[in-house]
Structures are given as structure tokens and as C-alpha cells.
Image (spheres, rainbow, N blue to C red):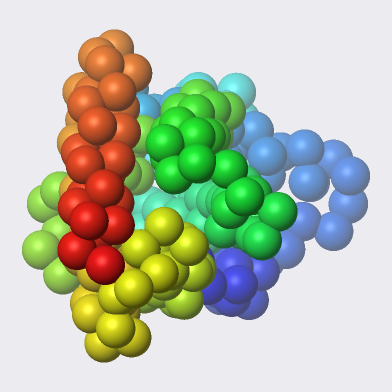
Amino acid sequence: MDHEGPKREATAMRRPARQQRSQATLERILQGAGHSFDEAGVDASTMDAIAERAGTSIGSVYRFFKDKDALVITLTERWRERAADVFTDLHSDERLTADADEVLADFIARFARLVAETPGARGLLVSTINAAETLPDQSWTPHVERFIARYAPGLPPARRRAAAQTYQTITFALMVDAARAGRAMRARLVEAQSVLTGYIRQLAAES
């Protein structure tokens, strides 16, 4: 995940919220947009519906955001920032003293909690299904390489890099699929954990 969130948020928004009341209004708008994205979907959500959910006027929404795309950009950057906060230490030296199964179970649990606690996360993830150009964030590749190196230490560097990229692609697809499953998300995440565990075990056997 990149760390350009604040800069891009400022670009997406018409103006920053400088006063406490303005900040509160902005947060209500973002919460309203997030819940609308989760329930109705990004495409079906309208600025009027978002204003209604936020309990504010349509003029207030347009004061901060010129269109729905600007809201999508802002919420996407917030998701990326929170994901970075939640997952960065997952591949730390201390965490990688645990078994691979435990680390993967921790990842799945963190993901489920992050989606539950972040309005708009589910809707934004589901919307990526229709965006063919959407790819996993490759800035995580070095972290995934560390993870693979810990449990499959005999893999050559080039093979490890390729495996890390494949792991990210698989993980991204599985997480999007789980988000799309709605109430069945947790069951899908159990299946996702099995797939990822199997891949890591295969790499370990190969090494």
C-alpha cells in the first residue's frame, strides 16, 4: 500500500475541513458514502443518497467533493492507509517466529476486522471486480518475499520474487471474492486461508 493518501485526498477534495464543525460534517459525508457503497454498491450510489445518509444537504457534499469519483478516491486512500496500519507488522521478524498457519490465520482475522470497521471497504473491494486494470499493490512485494523466505528458505531469489507476486495476485482475488460474498464473507475467508496455506506449504516443499 502506498503512503500518498493525504496528498491524494487533498487533491480529490474541493477544500479541506479546517474547523471542527466542518470536520464533523466531512466525516458524516464519508461515513454516509461508505455505508451507501457497501449497501447499494459504488455504481448505484448517488450524491443525493449520500447526502441523505449523512444527514446533510447536497450543497454540503458538493462543497467538499466535486463528484462521486472524488469521494471514491478519498475513501480508497483511507482504506489503503488503514490497511497499511493493520498489516505492516504482519511480516516483522517478531511475527515471523510463529508458524505460517498462525500468521495466515492472523492475516485473515485482521482483514475481516478491517472490512467490518471501515465503511465503504466492502463496496470498494467489490467495485474492483469490474475494473480490469485493477492490480494488487506491488509495494507489498518485499514484505511478502520476507514471509516466503521465512517458510521456504531454499527458494532462489528470482523464484521467491515470482512466488511473492503470485501470492499477492491470489490473495487479492480471494479477498475481493470474500467481500462480494456479503454475509458469507467469513466462510469464504476460511476457504481463502486454506488456499493460501496450501500455496505456502507447496513452496516450502519445493525449497
